Image (cartoon, rainbow, N blue to C red; front, side, top):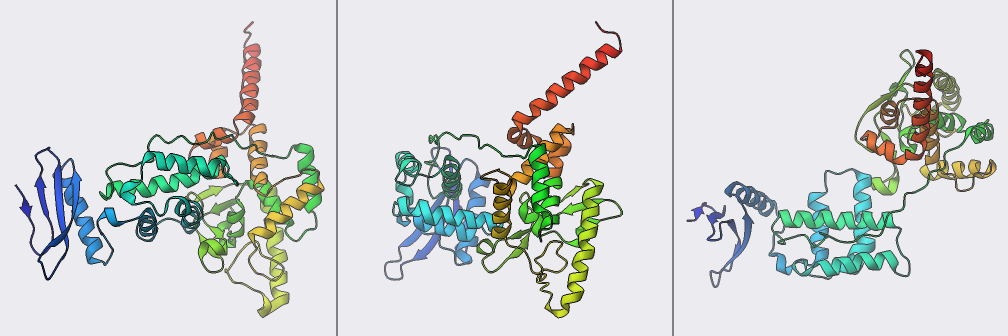
Length: 389
């Protein structure tokens, strides 16, 4: 029996097959009186009621909830980005839009949403994996993840019965090698950056493991010289991600972390603060303090650019014979140095700002063997000390 709601709020009923169905009138033909409706299905009355409530809100807010049969995948992806991705971080949204515009829509955009099937999705994945300009396995995985997320939402909204992304075979992911500096290379790197305008930044990057954007977004009030700590709570986002110019955003994981670097690092920062204060005083009103209180700026007080630091890191790498060296490899170097110094993996993971210890273990698995060997040697020494033979 139908449970009717007044004033165009829809109806809910239990179907003969045991499922619940909600119907919502979208419009009424004034000439024929024929209603245009959408149906939503679920296993429980509450499930369909929630779907109906969401659909009514969309309708009342002017968001299209047309019959899925008329929508192409392109139509749905555009709606998904505009309506369901508004709360995600700007750099993530930028990445989603790139995947949609550059790959998904050109290959699948014209397909009807309700007509998209497993075979079409598998063909799409195969094509972008092995076409004239194949994407790297990780890029294929990221692109597929965006499509899968959009179609999962379509299932939740009763636009399609099931997600055609299920059981798709993706190209094998080969673990990307990292390029940490060894002890000799670290010394050469420090010599190479000596006297450079961004020397302190590179030194801090090397001995804290902070991400490039985090260093660029670091402010002086994040540094507590008395406690010897640095609070990492934001990053500086590139203009093409933010939409217009550069902007400050939360960290990659949205989490705030407190790190306690070596006292020498804090000493470098203290010296840099004095140097920066001198420059600011000399320039006066010419000091370009676009983002107030930034720790690392160019000589004119303006924020640094990602491309500048990326190119500088590569040049320093070439200078010390480390071709292909990236700024991010400074972060890897810090992690490996911590492992070799005997730090526990939980502390290393927390300092790096990883979501879980397993992420740290996965990236640095080859180097954690050193920790196991060191642990075994310590146990062997302990056993010898207590007379175990």
